[in-house]
Image (cartoon, rainbow, N blue to C red; front, top):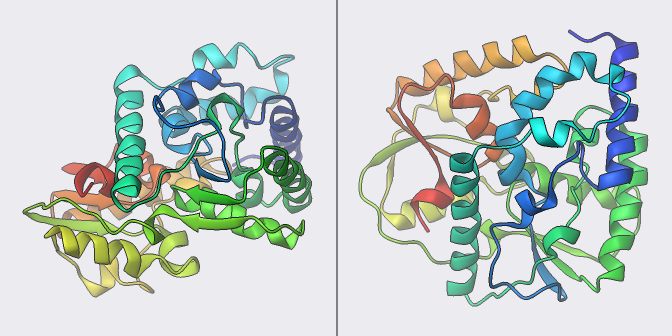
Length: 294
């Protein structure tokens, strides 16, 4: 576990990176925007990825650098070391394009900020750096206003949670909505899966029944057990704990994967962090719902 002083130092480095790059660590922005080809640039309604699906597969590598990160004088070399593989990026890009296709089939054609899209600041919120998160939120709200953005469509629970918390720190009239609230299209799918719910979507953001409704509409049968997948009885994947204590995070993920394997060898998730955290431990097929039902 990191010491408080080290955590404080990590917080300063994250803030410095966010102010410099609009990302928690240096990332080639083409990695973030490479999935989008035909979306119009900007507009009053945008899809907002916060680069979560794209970079989350590389975060584990970043976490391994964290204990010694304060010894780095400059962090730009990390951009070459901390990056997803081609297959990981191909998967992330497919998920995002599937979400856009589902939105368009539901009558919504969002714009996108491409390389100008900033990260949400969720990591500051989830590590408890509330004052820093509030200051960063003010900066991001100003950026959206400058771009003429009025409605933001989020695609993952951590970004959606962060943006809905902005109002606590800065008054704004941005409309924040998740894609799961907008899509009414699914393709037909056969077979059984079990599900690992996002803690944020399920318990705090009121979206549990939205994605379960879409899964049911697709034809998938969910295999559940109240003690494993219940709203109040299921457990976290452990992922958000990674920046604070990686070993405990991995142990939680290992135990969670064992529980889910009792129900099915095919697992659906709704969050890029859950996917990356559970994948090394789950002995079976694990997929995001946007890979399966759109």
